[in-house]
Image 1 (cartoon, rainbow, N blue to C red):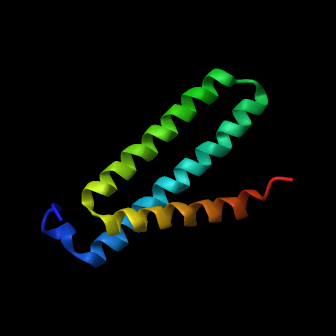
Image 2 (cartoon, rainbow, N blue to C red):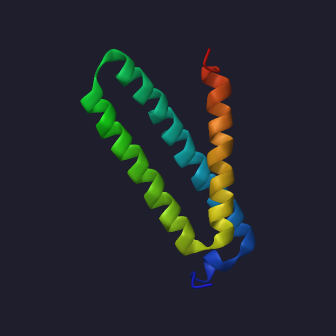
Length: 95
């Protein structure tokens, strides 16, 4: 592992990766909901800009988690999926 000394702790990678994944996931899936609303209103240009911004943020976050370690990446992915589940329950399932 090439991470710095404080980040080499497995517990810190798990907690940090999970927390970062949950925060970014919540933002990502909220922005996805806004994307749907923008497309529904016909604001395609804004929807495309928001799409580019949310994908860029997700890719950068995953890249940083890869640099920290594999365990941080896995915990981040789990946090991302947990945030998705929370938002799907909060916003409702599509009909």
